[in-house]
Image (cartoon, rainbow, N blue to C red; front, side, top):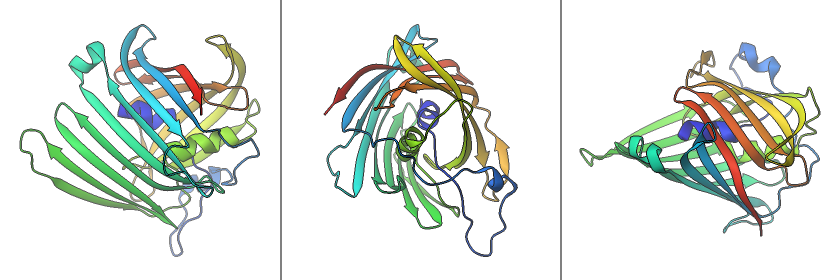
Amino acid sequence: MKTLLAISFVSCFCASILPMQAAPTWASQLTTAKPGAHPAIAPQKLFYQLSWRGQVQAGMVEFEFGSKGTTPQVLQATCEGKSLGIAAGLFPYRFDMQGKIQRSTLAPLLMHCNETDGEETQVTTVTYKPGKVDVTEISRPHSTGKDTTEHKTFSYAPVFDAFSSMLFIRSQPLKQGDSIVQVIHPFKTPYLAKIEVLGRENINGKAAIKMSIELTKITSSLTLKPYKKMKTATLWISDDTHRIPLEMRVAAFIGDVRMTLQKQEVL
């Protein structure tokens, strides 16, 4: 489930390395960090169903953009979800997440996430600073009830989170054949994301922009490592002013996982 979330909203653009640090070999692939001209997202709630192959319900996810705490300078976004049905029996999981995004640049400022599964509860706080990302993760195993805390720093910029990356992608022209390469840091691990616009088509009765997504892990030494939990991912977003995700299909290590829009509420 966490893998799907991290994948669903991918994006961050360009890169500039801190002084005295050699640029990684993949840095030349990165695209511009400048937001595109597409209109900003309207305040709204989005409701999704998670499933295996679109047949067996596995969970639900709800997003809200423009939630409590939003200002003219900072957009507040929230997300929550849980596993359901057979999936909940095999993998009980629930989460709630909130993020703060700078409106003018679509850069992330803060991400905070609470997660609970069958084994432990984790609280992850990611702070996005000039030139680096600071991560604090507190884990509490259900078996012991004792907290362990891990701190990590990723020295690279610019880096986007799950919310800001989604907003950044939708801001771009997204013409057929366009390719976007970016660095994302949705939780405690950074990734190099490659997104390609495959074209326009209808999905679930709606006009959509179809894109492919490829993720590769970035190590602490800025080298790349295969991301084995995800083989391929395809994302469709609405081909309209809103440009919201309509469906995402992920060929993951647990099988064919899908996230499908059920309802949109413009606030």
